[in-house]
Length: 284
Length: 329
Image (cartoon, rainbow over all chains, first blue to last red; front, side, top):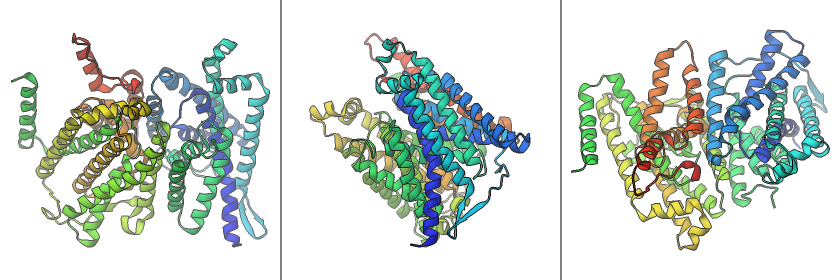
């Protein structure tokens, strides 16, 4: 097998880890609150700016900057829920979609207003690993590892804790949980905070690899929705696997053609698969 | 002669009088408003029945790029290029629409599939940078005043074209609004199975409205391309344009004939006004406020501006005639 192709595939899988993390966050929010955050990738953008300013401008230690960025993103998630989602909770799904779409416009333009359209890099240079004469990005390796740890942490939180059980209960039947003594509104806030925190975690991992600019959300936002829908909206395990399928397509397509065409391939693959399995790949 | 007739006549008189009194900048704005109003109306033909497409950026992109590329590289007149572009958009609508409807891809799933479609066209246009100039954009070959090339440096001509286009869009809207198809599509929008059970050909109705909507959107895109001469993938296709179309149409109101046009007028007046107000020092300020207003509009006025006004009007009529709110769609 072509060594460069193998390298592309491995890097693709590594990127899939971060996408899987984002898909988890989006799916969690959809599964519990039943709202698709079109602007989810722009929360990541905010988190990346947070990392950039805390670390590169104010010279905080990197772990502290990461922690603050994750906390900030979690607060942002709560804020989004309080200000935008809560008022449209009983509106038509389309209106909910559009309300978060308006947020997308707002966040992108506000970031442009505050920071300009410059590409900014936090300036952390991580070494490139050479394994069997293949070059693997260390940043991606870390991102992959942390994303997996994050995913498993979320899994255990949902399975083992009281709040996690309540969250799963709401996802199953939102009518009945009130009778079980669960305060829906509080759970919604918790879920929004977790969703925001996952976006913040992804932001930290992406900040190591990419420059941040106000429209970075547009580059991988649509890909995340695609992954979630492919896995079945609300199906976390499905989304997790779909992330790797899509990132592999992008990696292999990018190796043979160009980056744009690899995305065209991934989107086309998505459209065709939706015709074959309209409720997602892993939904029976 | 009823009051509506008089209002329409006054409106037409104003439209005819405008080029004789207005400044060039103002004309430029009005032309843009009319072209966008046409495209938003085309989207609303589907959107009003709950078929929310985020893929109209794809149709607009095809409509704008195909005639411009054919003219610049092969010297083919837009009079041939535009019909080809419209046909291509309809073909794309069939290729994606038919399986979507056959496999019952609806709601969120339909919105996100069509979103992927508009990204496919955006990225394909960007990837073909040898021909289209990629994200740097593309300026078509200019020849000055020419009917053959459909290029007019003088704004009056495009004003005329835009007015005719816009009026044609309204006529199509009204014909569909008054046809039996509208009843059928409303039934489909509420419950596909029930609609099929009472004998409505669900596939035929959905395909027809989708094809009409795609064709008109491509036509609007083509005229946009002829007017601006400069095209950029980001401004005629992709997620941003698709969202822009959906937002403006919803903001104006998709259930009323003039709703999408009011949406075009308001959004363009707003962005342009904010742009002038803030100047070029604060890039993004205009869109920041625009974004806030969009969110507020969706939260507090989900049936759009015209819908809200009509709601007030109809609530006073004794027959109990009411306008369907979007939240019921």
